[in-house]
Image 1 (tube, protein in one colour):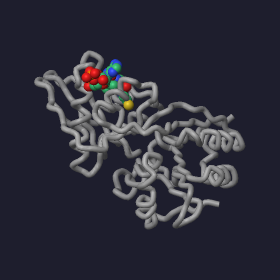
Image 2 (cartoon, helix red, strand yellow):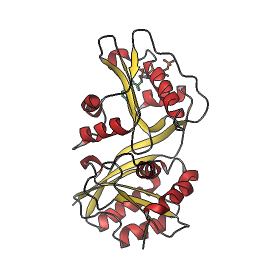
Image 3 (cartoon, helix red, strand yellow):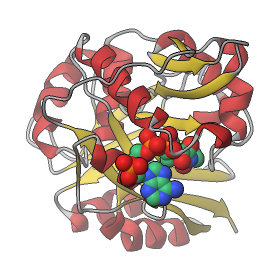
Length: 278
Ligand SMILES: CC(C)(COP(=O)(O)OP(=O)(O)OC[C@H]1O[C@@H](n2cnc3c(N)ncnc32)[C@H](O)[C@@H]1OP(=O)(O)O)[C@@H](O)C(=O)NCCC(=O)NCCS
């Protein structure tokens, strides 16, 4: 049995989830997207708990509206302090949209893989672990570094969405439209050379993180990444947020860059699971 929360209950859910960082990142990002009325195309998720107002397990799943972007249409996330409760909910109830040909669980704790894959199996799905990430966030004062001479900084425009999504390891159907919506409704920051060529960029997402950071190959190892992300943090601090997000465990360049920025690397790994209909 799971309880679907009404919109008026969501601010309290957000408040109660705060201490559960970094496990709460994706669900809190989706909650904020909804509560801040960011974008109708990004915030179409229901939030369910095992019991209310005290709960051990929270699930976000696509709601019944049809205006959600294709790229996030099968996104679920789970957060639990009771694995057996989660197992019971996933196996015995209809909280997950097992009617779709693919069901994705994004940014969940690695130690929940067996619970999710067993639930997927019992509903006729095969679970595939796609990515493993670590949460890395700036959590202390950071001096923003000056922009090198000859480069200018400004936000991305929607025209850049294709370049951005061509360079991430999780792009797919509808990813460019998704990125355009992020650029329209969230913060982004990019650097351009004197001929207006893109040199580096990063942006915020509806999952409560900044990400997709990239420095063009001919500009790497010149501390452009450090400058960009320190400037992005400054921008976010003005709005009460901090720079940080998920870094692939194998991405040593990015992990070192984030450490250099003074980010804390949280030890618990998180994963992305794609479940395919057998
Ligand atoms: C990761 C990336 C953004 C780094 O950008 P960059 O401008 O080259 O990084 P910087 O020059 O600012 O380097 C900052 C620090 O990061 C570390 N670093 C950066 N690239 C590194 C590499 N290839 N190997 C080891 N360390 C590296 C170094 O410690 C460096 O500091 P130092 O030169 O004083 O030792 C860039 O390599 C990139 O775009 N990679 C592909 C996209 C990507 O993986 N994005 C991350 C998505 S989450």
